Amino acid sequence: MKKVLIALSVVFCVTACGQSSNASTSDAPVEAAELDATVGEVVLPFDRFAMTSWEEDVLMSATGATINVCAADKAVETKTVLPTDKRVHDEIYASEHYFGPWTEAQANRWGFVPPMTDADLFYNGIEGGPQNAPEAMFLSEEHNYTPEDEEVIGECRDSSSWVDLSASLTSESPWLTDYPIFEETWKEHEEAVRIIGELSQCLTDNNLVPLKETPWLPTGSQSNLIDEEQIDMAVTVVDCKKSLDFTQRIANVEASLQQPLVEKYSREMQEHRSAIDEMMPQAEKLIAEHPEVFFERNPKFGQ
Image 1 (cartoon, rainbow, N blue to C red):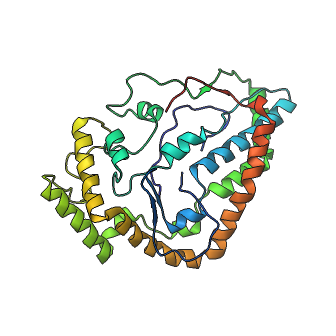
Image 2: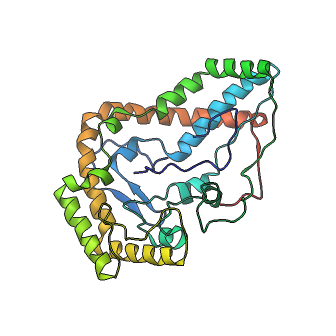
Image 3: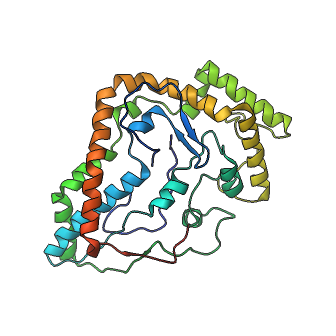
C-alpha cells in the first residue's frame, strides 16, 4: 500500500499535478495480499478500490485541460502537462517499498531509497543519484500572465466541474481515516511481531544490526543515499525476506486488518471505484480531443 510521496520533477503554475496499486471492482472477500515481485507491487484490500497513480495523473491532466479550454475561449492561452508516460507508472511508480526494499531489482537500483525516476532522484537531492538535471519530461515555455489573465484562469477553475470531481475522487476516504499506519502499529499484532522478529534474527545472523524501532531495517541504512554499501545491505535484507517469505506473510497480516473495514465500507468503496471507472474514459477522451492545451513531450526524456 503506497505511502511514499515523491516530489514532482517539473512544476507548472496553472494546474496541480497529482499513487496506488492496480485496482479492481471485485468485492469478493480477500484472504491474502497479492505481490508482483517483477514490478515490486504490493496489493492490499484497500488498493483494489483506490485510484492508481496513473488514473490520478490522467484525472489531473483532464482537469487542467478543462480550465485551459475555458481560458482559450476567453483569449487567454494556457497549457498544462499530459499524464506522465504510463510506462513510468507501470515500471517505477507501481513499485514500492514494503517494510523496506523487498525485491532484488529495488535493492540493486535504489538501495534503501524508495523507488523513483532519475528526475525524482535529482530533484529530491538523493546522494548517488544523477549529478546533473535530467531532461525535462515536457517542452515547456514560460508564460507571463497579467492580473486579468489570472482572473480569467481563476474563473475557469472555479467553473470547472472536473475540479470538483478531482477533489471528490482524491480526498481522504473514511476507511483510510479509520485505519492506522501498519508500520507504526505492528507491535500491537502478535503475528506481525513474530514475523518481524524472524527477519530481525536473519539480519543479525548476516552481520547486520537491526534498528530498534524499525527492525526490518539495518543500522546504517539511509533513504537518501545510493552507494555500494547501501546496495549490499539492501540485497542482504531482500535475501532474508525471500528466505522467510517475509513480504507475503506480513502483507497478509495487514490484509487481515483491512478486511473488516472493507466489509464495513463495502458500499462506499464500490461507489468510489465505480466513479473512477466512469471517469477514466471521459478523461482520456477529453485529453485526446484537446492536444492544443498541453505541452509537448520531450523526446529526450528518460527515466
